[in-house]
Length: 312
Image (cartoon, rainbow, N blue to C red; front, side, top):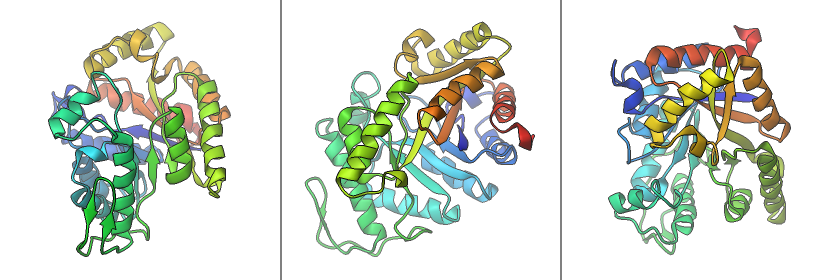
């Protein structure tokens, strides 16, 4: 079992001390025994750009895996992004994992595309093709022909640290996303509120993999989960409500309908996380419900004590 955490890259989480404190958080996460360190991607709230953050974290860490959760590739120029990802993979010594997504309808979807001047329509097909272009560049392709991107002459690309490039996971739990994960991606990073939905989705991913001759066990089953550990479930919910309002402009009661949460005492959080591992999750990535830097570090310590107490 791998346990990772998200870096608190949003301005609401680092405004008091500035973003340079995120480097200390990254070091502390590695020293506390976490397996991975992930970053979010958005243009709708001020935050440190994710690939810049990972490039900064790479030289100050040695073991911990670095990841995006989830990067929005169709909002970026694909050739330049392939070069940036390969560069981060090189700087980290091959520790990069790239979870990608295509956005979703509503307040957090179409405005991103409008800001980036990229059509909202066919965004999933555009995402798959972008990933295929990255992989072609990393493999040394000299041309590429697709529905959205065609190049008769590709330059020699920056090579990633690992042959074939970093593993690429997909975030999403619609039937189409599950099928695409099984057919084309190296891992799955959803956030379903119900562990039973996670189990059903993972089964669909593995079935899709088998249909195209892929080994189902080659696809990493991961989970994006919001975590708050406190003296009581009520205290945890109050703090997480403040967090979701600052992060999304939505109360916890609305956010928990669409995302996975583990809230409460250490035992309550451990029990909820265990339900997801029983459903098949093997790499949990926790976003800590804390706005202040000191509280973020406290939550990091509490999660470490819950998930791998033997290393404390």
